Image 1 (cartoon, rainbow, N blue to C red):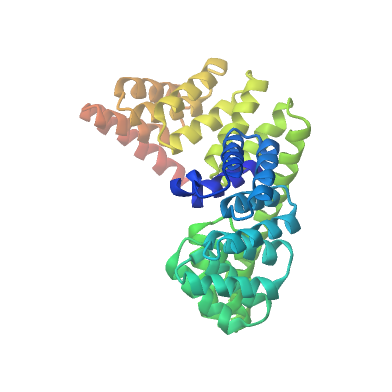
Image 2: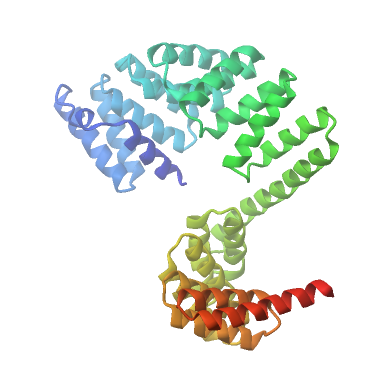
Length: 388
């Protein structure tokens, strides 16, 4: 997500219609504030920044303007300015809970001022005990100060409020490791990996926990998984940087898309692969990968279109025919599915799964005799491969 998109997403998160009208403020400051929001909505951060800075100069009580400025500064990595803006937002409105959260985040994560961050976050928790992200940040602050018991309590509370928080779960797992609560740490990291199987650091910490209790084989598996994921993350970083500098080269876009696909980042993979096929339309592998993504997202018509493009360029690839037939099957277009499964078998008659798929298509189409005959051929091929 780009800095602007992060800013605007956060803006929409906590600004409500009553705050946008702001009738009690200095009229020109309110006008500039509204102009700043409109500029931000249209992606013009510089114009938004200028308008908002003028607004808070005219009227320092515009808490929302301070906070939005803080988000802009934060997105631009101007962290001291961001911290000051969020601080001013809390001065303008002492109950502005999101400003406290953002201030705590900048102080803790970006400036490393754990002591001041803790004070801000403790005050925020006293104001809103059910704010999961604030409790998560406070738990991280306690963990960094080696207040492990307090960190565990805070992070467990945060997870009760938001069980999907990866940050809270990962930090809790490490706090439990520090307490030598090995089994609890293992369960915490396993739950995290269930949510995000590509969380490299969680695999490393889980491997560490297993090793501490003597389960060396499972520990080694997790540590190897950590190594693989770490390499992939390095490749992602490198490829993203490369395509920014060389946007007209197809191969890196394809390689980037494949890694994103592997990590189930469907939207990002789609964008990368679409760039790849636009730059190298004669290559079929990009269409095949896009077809797979559309199939996984249940966009079967788009999957058909992608597989058809691959087949137009390479009509004799059996797997393309099988994939196209699968998409037709999901669309309940059984004659088309049967036709392409049959073609796949003609192109590669030794592949058992093509017969199994064709059998299913016949069954769904109501052709039960053909389904049974085709299934028998599937069994013959599988038994033959087993005996060998």
